[in-house]
Image (cartoon, rainbow, N blue to C red; front, side):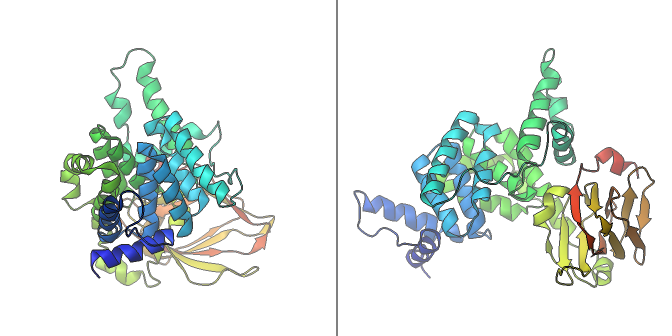
Amino acid sequence: MDRVKQCEVKFGELFGGKPTQNEGSDPEFMRILQRFIFGEVCYTGTLDNRMRELITVTVLAVNQTLPQLKAHTAACLHIGVTPVEIREVIYQCAPFIGFPKTLNAIAAMNEVFRESGITLPLERVETVTEETRASAGLALQAPIYGTEIEERYAWLPGDFAKAVPKFLTELYFADFATRGGLAAKERELLTVVILAAMGGAETQVRSHVRGAMKVGSTKEEVVCALVHAMPYMGMPRLFNALNCAKDLLSESNIREENKMMDTEFEKSNVFGLGKENTAYAQYFIGNSYLNPLTEPQAGKPFFANVTFEPGCRNNWHIHHAAQGGGQILLCVAGSGWYQEWGKEARSLGPGDVVEIPANVKHWHGAKKDSWFSHIAVEVPGEDTRNEWLEAVTDEQYGSL
């Protein structure tokens, strides 16, 4: 298809209508705009319609182009993006563009929601409390960025040397990045877009490009996100973002190297990698994959093969049950760890079996230099539920 036909197809997918022909006061400009964005840019790279529209909404919120934000909020709903996902994209702009501009974007978004018959407020997706926000924010920040900010601003006078890094940890990472609705990989990629769209934040763009790749984005996805943002933020900001992260985006990144699995591990992992475990990504440090082996049925065990990339582990958690319940791990391939609260960690390898009693706090995951797979067996019981708790810190994990 040529770009005119591609524009018609993409415009219909997103908005349910047809692009401009000769309507309106400026049909020539609209033809240029629509054929470039929907006939060319939307077909460049691998990102799907959902992620592209979330990127578009992000840039429009940053730029405060509210009429277009309303149009693309409607487009998001049209293609099946949930209201919560749209809301989370706009909420997480706040630490970067400030609360007043974010409130403007929220007002435009909510106007579309009301017109679409969506009841407000939407469901809550907070995962931290006043007591846990500091530790939860640090648990997300430290594996990706370490103590970079604290060290960089140690020169600030008086209380500010501690207050400024603390505000970043507890506002961005705790109050926003811990929220549900979006996977960690998506949040970090959209943060790159926010910073690029702002302009003048190239130092932060570079830092978050590295962060995006650490939590799962490929360099192609990062470039695709920036290129897709370009028609809405302008070419100079695209080039500034690409230039400041050139060395990161032109070299083989960690994610792509990790995905090149060891041949022996691939052979051993006979139950298959499955799909990226995005639904529970907020409860993991690093990337995991899930391959369900049976259908979940009440009263019957559920089997799933879980694969952890090197260094990946889940948070401390508890399988609650009034009777029965718990979990069994059947180790399949690679090397990993299992630890119960207050006890020494146990090294795991193929053939090991772990019986996890109900109501016991624990975690499990890969060793830092090895992939690891186990079949997780959910044991039936009464009043069963999972409670996700704090992350396993780098200090705890690194001491093993």
